[in-house]
Image (cartoon, rainbow, N blue to C red; front, side):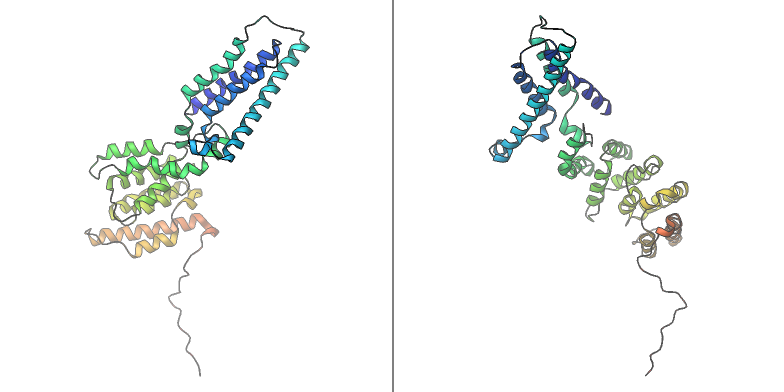
Length: 321
């Protein structure tokens, strides 16, 4: 997708070359309107977020004012490009060139089909790719909804799906710049107790605790999200704890992405019911406490206990009359 984005930006130069050539060749200013129409069509194809989507929206005064603003801005841009071309032609004393007016118009128009073949704005936005900050801002309101739609295929996977299939699906769905939004959506969806999704939970714990995800901070609080997904399932917690211990030792600077020490201790003190042997549950509790101490040490002064612990030797002060 990044390669496509670079190609689109390169091909978009054809759009601007057309008016420059027309001005350089000394064509009349009447061609400005033809180029403006091409520029507007390019915007409608490559920037659909800037235009009303339904007939009802087109009937509003706000939509017409927005469209008029877009039209005038493109008219001004074409006029500037045309003027630069004519200025350069005058400096070079080129004069009027015997060139078919369709040639510069075709150069600009060619940018539309070429860019559209490489770029689908809505598809790219669903994966977190945007041509520029303006396009990202336009899609920001729909980002959460797009993330929610993107994870539906994962939630529809059956509990009996093979681990390899689920792991591949998770890796494919989260291999996008919008991975944080999608992981947040999955964490919220799996918080519902009626959803088991054992294979999906296991694959997500594996993915979120991979060193290449944690080390660069690619997804904020990935370790905390993985813990939320594993919490309540002793098998997943037994998978999570040793990986988390290794990661906090290797990357202490990422401690803020881990669950809070108090949360780890709270789970260690009240593990969910399980048929696992008592010594296995005790080892898991010890592992959670050890992880809490490691996270606390890595956080340093930032580690603040939510619930202050009462010293064991503290005694109540007797009241006096």
